[in-house]
Image (cartoon, rainbow, N blue to C red; front, side, top):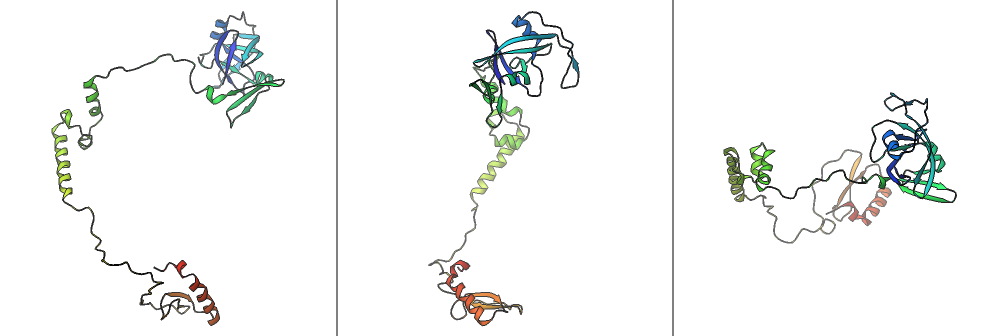
Length: 265
């Protein structure tokens, strides 16, 4: 949408429609502008709902001020319910006259005449209306209304109790629920919420790579065997039984250099 002036009248915004082959103006706006009598036409318009509309006529060479440019445009006059903020539709003919460039990603439309151009921010144009038809406000809230309003939408007694609505003259069911909640709170205060870990006192145990424990190893299938990275058959690992003695020694040599990467703790 782009702002448009016709003469000294701000007509609001115009909808730029690349799918329209004509420019469209509502009959009410045409009468307001006082542009004279429209020229009769035999054109029939097919609307979006596929109904057929008969225009009132055509008005030619209407001067539109769009930004700093003024373009002549022909309009089809049609009696339809007007959008006050976007009363007219501009089709491809006018956009072609202005050599329009539309940058969808940036939300901008550029109109150019010779070496000059004007840029419109399409998103900014549709953020707010030009004026407000009405303004509603509340200056004072009655105290009774403010207090009673929350309970209107609460039917569950537990929900009312959790919302602390006891000051509103709660019924017996709500009071009973609040009493149950109070008892639960007192009961929970006497219960330790966590079980003790019973961790042994003293220094923490050393990692296995510093002091390797003696482990009870399970038997392996024939294609696997144990190999040891530590002294006295400690820090066991599982390797293939198909490795030769030389291959096993090379593997153990590499693993010994990177024992910490194996996650021994």
